[in-house]
Image (tube, rainbow over all chains, first blue to last red; front, top):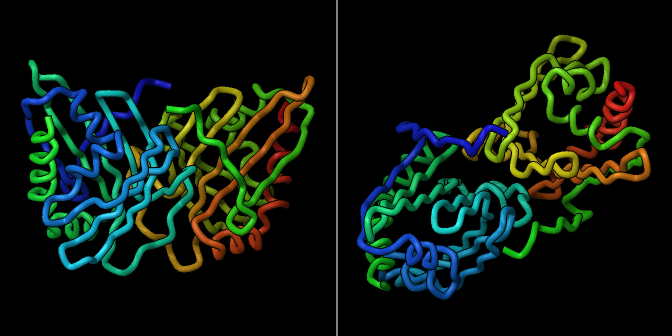
Length: 162
Length: 162
């Protein structure tokens, strides 16, 4: 092995959200990895995360259930790939628990892998979410859904918990 | 974290190939992880593995090109998920290098994750390949393609290299 993979964003396929926030890497890590914490911030209001399962190890389940204001629900199952406490968290929706490939979703749905990195900046953190897709259509669909605004509002909610 | 994931085969979705062979875990590991070795055994004759790329780290590329007796070629790209030298190798075709989700393949194709485990048995090895799929159709298609015979012949070729 020659050290961890270096992720080079591809603007055609990837979305990047980056911001310096005035909370510690520990606070952000806890928000991402403790189920009761995650439910408090993960989905921009008026949407809510009403259920969450976190089995924090490579191949372990990461499941969230999001509920919209009209009661519509989205049940998302994926698994963790890399876990470096307080620094890096990688998970994907392309594989379920135990790395099992996920059946294809309904038309118009897309699959992503998220690479979250936390780098200390004084008392704060440089928070980066690199979200990668398998094709341009998926990236475009995700962007159109409001990727940048959504991840920004969710992060505001996470910071406000501190 | 609570230790590595335990893989429980599901007969509806998974295929298992298991055999005790009279070669060391080191020999089998080398066959799986050194490109020039892998090309010598990976595909049952008269098929050949004509190209192979191995970037042996989580998220690293695993690519093989198989060529049939009539010149037809299959180019398979995936990535490694877990690497425990001489004991366990996990890779998937659902993600490409850097954990990027793979676009859906042509109709009739299927996606798998392979979990190879090597357990010393005296001077030999208990060799287990657990191959997991996302749905029953994929498992059936893979089985029909000749999973058990194919993995058996390939393993014979790997053992014969010792």
